[in-house]
Image (cartoon, rainbow, N blue to C red):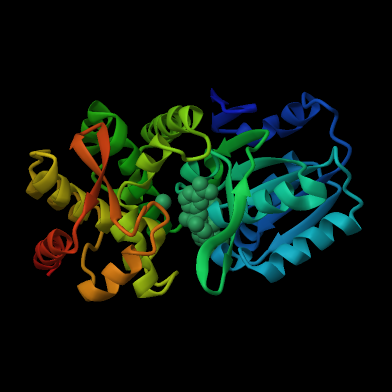
Length: 356
Ligand code: NAD
Ligand code: ZN
């Protein structure tokens, strides 16, 4: 088992590895002030697949099973979760445990952040993508007019990342989550990227030790950035690498049709091309793209540029109506730049040719 510490306004431990779930009791007992009662919010698929382990290692006073995945991030499920907390009699010293992927973490974090103006919560992430979402304290639910449009910052008290959960994750979810690992390497660590590209040839049979190492390194990279800029005033935006174009593709396709990480991969290739044009990155794209293809990522999108441009104009990073992109000056060195519609259109055409 590995342990990291994230030092934001509040400091919290992240435990990663096999059998981490066994530490739940010890971690909760060490919390100050003492925890009075516990509500467990768990993704329904995760509960079905891991019921025994969950009951064996997490003691809780009330259980609320969430709809699987993104459906948990709705106003109605939020209301039900608050209802479950009230019915269970949670007070200001109570604790919520989030057991599931990023969707569960976002809903449970938002519930904890707002119940009685804020109580503590612990993340028990169960997907690869959640190595990203469980750390950093962004919580949110969706509105019919926009994803993640209602939320706040609320850091967890601890993250318990047990690799046992990842064994039941479908390959497509592995691929989606792994895109964010690759993102962490691209924005922060050239050597790490090299290691991943050498080691990872098949996402369906990832080496356990390497996966744990990669998740730990990904969390470390995210943690270092969040520690310097908890509320995204400046460098936290680097974590958005690949997300400007990626989010547009995700929204255009209809959320859930293409998975988040699948779209982020498309967005990262786009941003690398744009970097080659604008920052002098000088990265050989053919090697990277053939590796990405070999891992099963589909970098094709049917979306017309005009639609994507309209969506990119709504990106939260934009200022004064200019589209702002996270680009790389070199691997590991991000920079934020404005980009004009013409140059964006050119890269869109390049990507279209490559995806065909
Ligand atoms: P998810 O939580 O929607 O889960 C994806 C699917 O995998 C669901 O069907 C779920 O039931 C299933 N699942 C989860 N764990 C499993 C397991 N161990 N075995 C089998 N099936 C399992 O998806 P995700 O990719 O983890 O998270 C995506 C969400 O995270 C999005 O809502 C996104 O907005 C959010 N997110 C938040 C942040 C943040 O900083 N807060 C960062 C990135 C993404
Ligand atoms: Zn993401």
